[in-house]
Image (cartoon, rainbow, N blue to C red; front, top):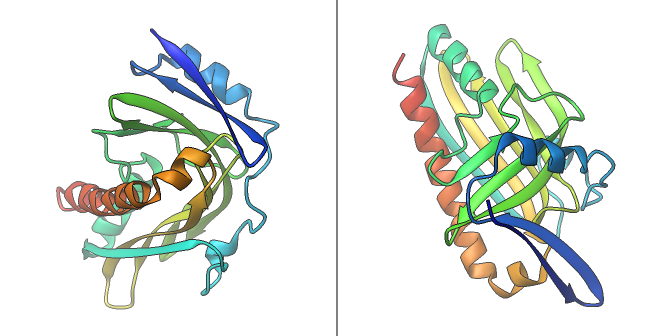
Length: 205
């Protein structure tokens, strides 16, 4: 397996990102994740996705779709959140793909241009309520973006089950600044495919 570190400088800030030309094995993922335990958040507004208004200075994304109706669909949607079904499997992966736990770190992998990019995030809060279930994670220093994203499934008074994926973010690396239109296009692609993945999973009840 060929693994490279991409090191560049931007505004006098040295940044290092890890990439792999093949999907990394579990040993490598575990080793890299262990090294992130002491990493700091790359943004100051932790838990801001709990607010109606997201922080200024970031791009805001709010997406929502209907998954179905009834308690069976809601339970299926909760299971989907626990299994990270909302991450399009063709070009995104999560490690470890276990139910999100408060303060735990995860590796968020994206395959762009034939390269797997390692990104690190930490769960900032979880929600386990009778009609609302999910979590939010925030980016650490080893992430191409900085900000926070929340994944929720909700059941309204009529029994309708909704999936929400919302985020605020801005580039955290110089090359993402340069390619921001492309980065935003991939964020929109992720939202579309995330909703489609959740709908496909829940409608298969």
